[in-house]
Length: 227
Length: 205
Image 1 (cartoon, rainbow over the protein chains, first blue to last red):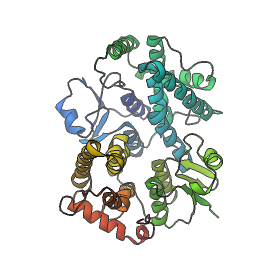
Image 2 (cartoon, rainbow over the protein chains, first blue to last red):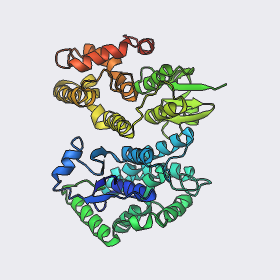
Image 3 (cartoon, chains in turn purple, red):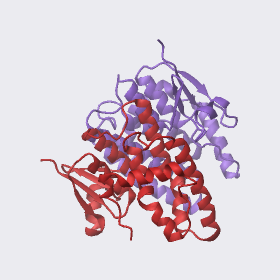
Image 4 (cartoon, chains in turn blue, purple):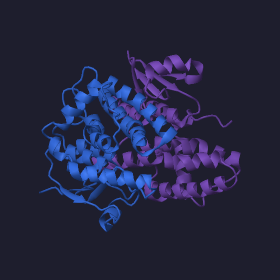
């Protein structure tokens, strides 16, 4: 009996991309539904009434939201190519860094791009400190997961693609030669055979970020920034 | 011989979650209060990234972030499971723990406690709305958030059973009463009555 797997996302959502990559790593077939967040479908609202956001995974009619919760669900449901290791301490390590990205690294770096003046300086200082921790964590490893891609790699994955785009659009360089291990990882991850075809079209992303930067500066409405 | 230490700080609810988990599973541990040691040394050593409690140290290896610790405890000591077996049910438990720990969902409770005037009133309304969600959508007809037994979500919600009554007394505003929130009210009584939890509640004063 064919299992029905659907993924609600947008073409560019950072949080949705992690789920796309996890499904691809495990060879799971699914139907992708790209939403227009300015005009959310009734189905999305039905499946995620609490947050009304993407991504949402629907497996045999049952919806799961929040990307980290989805990733754990995927790993527990489809056991091939695990994205979490077996050892509890190593699993804790991956979860810790996943949280770190979402709660600390991503917001501070995003702050550099959307804030100005003193706020931007603060965000930059925070980013530098946070990036130092990430660089340290990569010592002696090819991926955050060790020899192969794991949960933390998928979560940090936006650095491998979106970061370059944001730097290109803004003219700011954040991940520079101070972080050689991180730069090496970014290349390794983004060019990984399973990952490299999952990135959204470069040109489309550049246009999108220019538009968002314009909207921010002119005080326009900022829709889900990372979606 | 396993060595388990919990670095906490009374009355942090995040620290309590970790202690309750260990107690329910019958794991012996040593509790070390942050105020009893030099923050810059011990926390820097065990949690250099966040410099916060709680931290679990198991045979010398530190784990930080309460939710990460709870998952570690669950995987290392499988007795008295805190998560259901079914992946979908597990996902639901994780989803709601994530929801209740979200900054935006914690803030109204904090403002309810320490805010004044209009700010406090607004927070009280927001708290009521959140309690409604927990009562109707999350707890529903169940005895505990985990079903028949206390689970991880109960531990995450546990601060409410331990401290919300005290907060209401201090601000002199009653929200969580048996009439408006009968299920939550019953859950609080059941949670507090559990023999393990009963012995590990922050003192009333």
